[in-house]
Image (cartoon, rainbow, N blue to C red; front, top):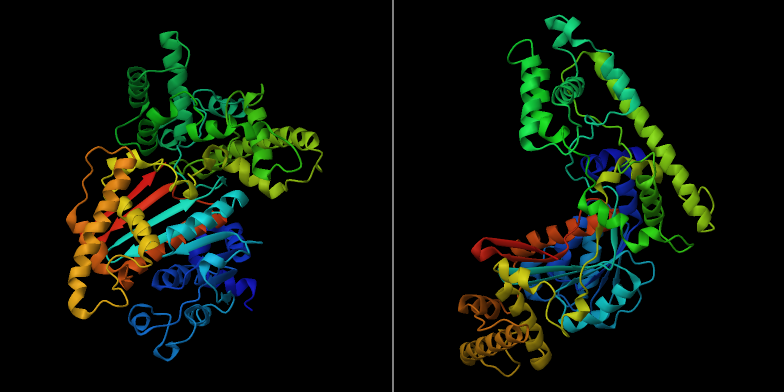
Amino acid sequence: MRTETDKAQLYDRQLRLWQKDGQAALERARVVVLGSSTLASESLKNLVLPGIGEFIVVDDALVSEADVRTNFFVRASDVGESRAQSIVRNLCEMNPDVHGQAVVKAPADFADLSNVSLVIACAQPDKTVRALGERCWSANIPMITASNAGFIAEIRSAVREHTIVESHGKVWPDLRVMAPFAELRAYADSFDLGALDSTDLAHVPFVVILIKAADRWAAEMGLEKKGLTYKQRKEILALVQQMAPAAGEENFDEAVEAVNTSCSDYVVSNDVNRILTDPAANTADAQTSNFWLLANALRRYVASEYGAGKMPHSGAIPDMKADTQSYVNLLRIYKQKAEQDKAELTQCLRKVVQEAALADDHVSAGEIDTFCKNASQLRLVRTHALHHEAETAPELWDNLVNEGVSEHYALFRAAGVFLEKHGRYPGIPDADTGAGDLDAQCEQDARELRAIAVDLMTAWGNKDPEVAESLVAEFVRSGYMELHNVAAVVGGIVAQETIKLITHQYVPQNGICIIDTANNLLAAVKA
């Protein structure tokens, strides 16, 4: 086994993305993969390399000659052997720290979801997906499904509830220019811009310049620094330019660029508001997750006199033109504010855990620290359930239509209906079909597949549905064969979404992704 130092060197690049906490979550994960096709192998390759803890491949298929041509994780010597065992053996050679296991049974018969972090279903019939999807939904286990028919592929994800603290989203710096807290106000007041020479003036942090300009604008206009219009922010911008000793001073240019974002009212994002107003943020008992305990505390913090409608400060500020001592002093002030805010939120949390009859240290100091630093970037994802799709119209149907991929989606579902009716996918010859009869069978399959798709679209409320013959032809021509280059792309996306869900970092896909490589199309349809 590798030491922590060895792992730090081996995983250096990915640690920069999801840090030690994310890597630890990945190494604790137990992922079940239904199917052992090329798509399954490519998805797992991108999980084994970064160090997934354990993976289980469930399939009863045997390695065929066709597999050797398209699946890089089986060998010619594996023909006739269990495909699941073959890909597990070859995948584990890539990373000895990863534990792989093969379960040789039909994916539809797999039932053990104990200690499972996530399920991936690769090229599985809709019937299997629905049955297992319902069980995963009940247990709140994330599930990702992926199918590949020639040049066309589909990825769907379903999770009842997924919470994210470290979403790594882009947010504007929280500088509190329009309502400086006491320490920031004192720091800004310590600068007498009129008494500084041009050299010293060029090293004043732009935050101070903005505070001075906003104060001057409010005094001249006799107005409060709230609810400013675009015109009023332009007036502050003009004052900043007047205050500059000369054109082109970098710190004054930084202040000009920051006027629109910093001279606006403080606003809590819609994503965070959705969490704070969720019923779960008003619940506190022994079964409540740490995220919702912290969200409950955050709701109280924001509503308190101290919080005054604002998030705890992260302590981070952008780099800026200033002399070293001025920047260090300013950074220290914001970090001290962040510590004060964290202490206040911790007091709110203590009340929450007491109401839940939990220990005061039930939520670790590290969790509190990470939560406070990322409070303005919290996310909550609740997808639609896959097992309801057969019973009702897809809840994302209008979005699929708007993105121009409704026909692709309908054909994937139609292929599932075709499989249940005939026991094979369209384009795959019957056992008694001769070589000379294959063209006639493909034409018949295409007509039937298109008719099923039209019927489904009609049932979903689409008037006069059209299904392009070229799309139908691709589904039938491929016979649901997985091309390695397409499977490699789709497998990469599947692994990426898996890592997001396991680490609870970055925002995962919430809906359906359709990929049509023949037409250079990729559409991520959001709920």
